[in-house]
Structure formats: C-alpha cells, structure tokens
Image 1: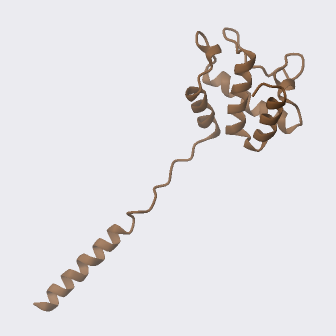
Image 2: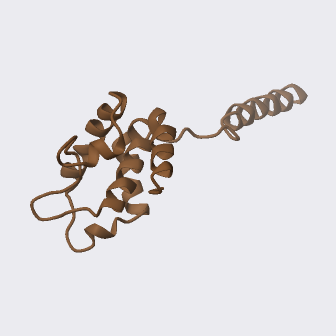
Image 3: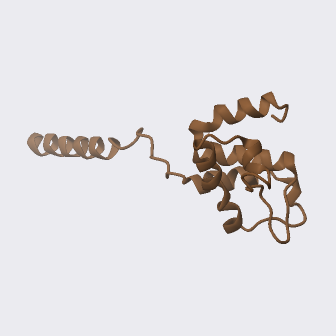
Length: 131
C-alpha cells in the first residue's frame, strides 16, 4: 500500500511540475506589422485635418514606403512634402492634410517603417521649429 501511495504522489508531483512549467513564462505578443503600428499611431494621435474627410487606409499606407525611400535616399522632410520636389504631401481628391499634420504623420510613419531615420527626421524638424 505504501508503494502505491508513493507512486501516486510521485505521479501527481510530476503532473503538477509538467503543468506548472509553462506558468510564469511570458506569453509572446503577436508581432505588429509596420502598417499596424502606423495606423494605430494615427488613431492614437488623431490628425485633425482629416476630421471631416480623410484618406482610406489604402491611400494612407501608400505614403510610408515612399517617405522612407526618399529619406534613405538623402532627401529632407521639406523636400518630400513639397509639391514641386518630392510631391509626397498626403492629399487626395476629397481630403487634404495641413502642413503641421503632414509632418506629424510622416514622423509616425518613420517610427513604424524606418525607425533608423527617426533621429535625423526629428533633428531636421527641430531645426526648422516644426517639432
């Protein structure tokens, strides 16, 4: 009888150890894509230029890769957002973005898509008084 009791206690202890071994381990968070981060940022920090009419997600998501490519190519924020230069100011047929909001959106995009460019963009905007 003592053998069965000892075996039962040992089995129970092993099961508890096995079941408890996953407790206390942090569950991995789902990986957020750059587009999820960017769109989330635009929700968390509303763009008031778009209060009445704004871009669709598809329209908005077209900008970050182009902005990052331009920044990596050595272009300035001013260059990217100027119509006669980079022509990447966020605007559509039925919506527009004020200049200050466009800079804010560009910073959100940089943080999500090309964070290595963030410090340069922030420094540039600080120098111009726009950040």
